[in-house]
Amino acid sequence: MFRNRQHAGEQLGERIRTLGIRDAVVLGLPRGGVPVAAEVARALAAPLDVILVRKLGSPSNPEYAMGAIGEEGVRVVHPQILEALHVSAEQLAAIERAERVELERRAARYRGGMRPLDLRGRAAVIVDDGIATGSTAEAACEVAASRGAEEIVLATPVAPADWMETLGEHADDFVALETPEAFFAVGQAYAVFDQTSDDEVLAALATRR
Image 1 (cartoon, rainbow, N blue to C red):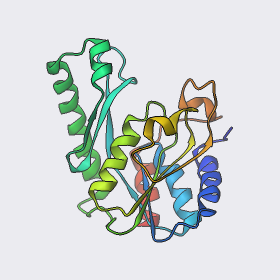
Image 2: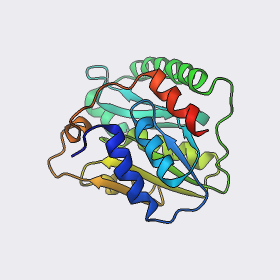
Image 3: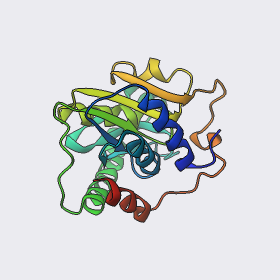
């Protein structure tokens, strides 16, 4: 569906531009969401920042989200998943501690002492390179709300067909370019889906803050 994240971001930016959003701040989820968000910010002529969240992956499969954490002390946990996977409170606490360390590392690296962009009274356009379970997207929406965003738009190139049912109460508007019925993984939508580096995130932020 998309050549790479930049190509996806260009298309997503054009779609969002038609919404006529005013006074927007574009917020990319590191790392892979930032190259997409950079193109969206360019299309909207809007400032770009990161919004920091971390998935709480299961002990047996770190890619499978049991919930997520974010800045401002945001914490999203799905009890039904914990119960189904027989995850103890001690296991969950250990995973959360490790992800908090990485969250703080990224905040220090990406912001370099700068404060997050002010969202009070503005439209927060939250962008990721794809949405699977929705846990990190939900946490990101909570972070934006806690920072006073007047409107929250959740945008992504690809998401499952039922993504709005899962996340409907967490954002005011939703944009997905592709919502395949046969959804297996975000990477299926991209010809090239390499890991995004810290340096690529920093380069994108340097041009748009």
